Image 1 (cartoon, rainbow, N blue to C red):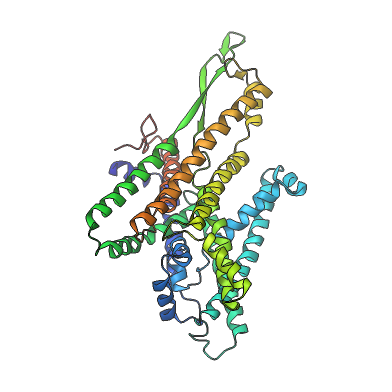
Image 2: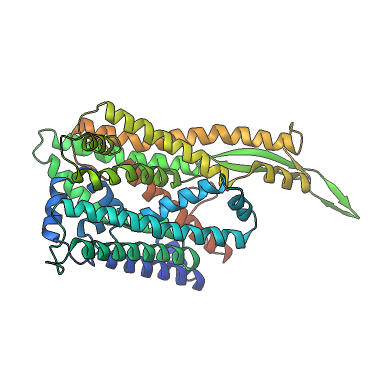
Length: 450
């Protein structure tokens, strides 16, 4: 394995891409530690110490500690993800955008531009809400802006955090273009991995006085390694649809006649459904937390906002009907986005038309529309299985956290994202190695070489 890792630096283009990616990640991690002006960081630390198990702790994990430090990257990449979701949904709703999406590369560039505009708008809105939340918590105007007005402090926060999010978006796009792997996913990967040591220390601290300390730690470790193994197995799993190409004689040469297959991935959407579902669920709870302090604790609006925050926050205590609501909505969103992302990235009709064009057919299935329907039927079944698997892996650790009463933020969602992004990145490196005639990281069966 070490020899294969060394091979990656023998390919000039791959070496350049890897070093560029690492440099961008280092810049991102440096920005996490640059604080936003006007924040009392000591009080911010106390707030996270008291509420590390709730919404703030979950958001901090995905921002890689940026929210705890209230750095210029405190919003993370969440506004970009939300803008991407909204734009992809609008493509299927607004005919003009749908027409634009079918115009090839130029159309995709235009939609990407609209997504960037949406990121700035959502980032500014979230930054404004956070400024209200911190002001209500008494954390504002504790830094270099002491004595200034809330208006100017809030304006500075909005400008700083929105610029930070825009810069992260730019870093992600540059990694995708000039680096290796998907830039946005890699930045999320780096943020989660950076919080792993703190999460492990937190888990140890919450269990060290427990009489069943050793058994619980063993069970949690076994579950984590089991999730990693199952994620790899399912991610690499495919349904092979047999394809036969008709034999064609041109002069003295015979073309076609070979048998092959179409590999339909069980989880073709990868970690995207998890990222989308998590972002959607975080948004209502974040908005409710931003404005709940503006109302009296006896008012109806306070009760509504507090209930929204409870319903859309990952449960850490007893399993209640609010917890069950969260599980159902979270699982439903994961399954929905599994179908949604598969639908926008894989078109059975186009595949069937291309097969017909080159004389290919599925044995026993008529070419053309019947082939498209057959592939779509298979894709529907395996996507459901993949979506249910993703939902189960994401929800199971949350249930175990409630049962064991332990702070364990590095659970199913984080592991799914980390493992999925790592596999996608290794596959791209594999492609570069194979095109330069180097032996890749995987054997002929598609498994990682030992």
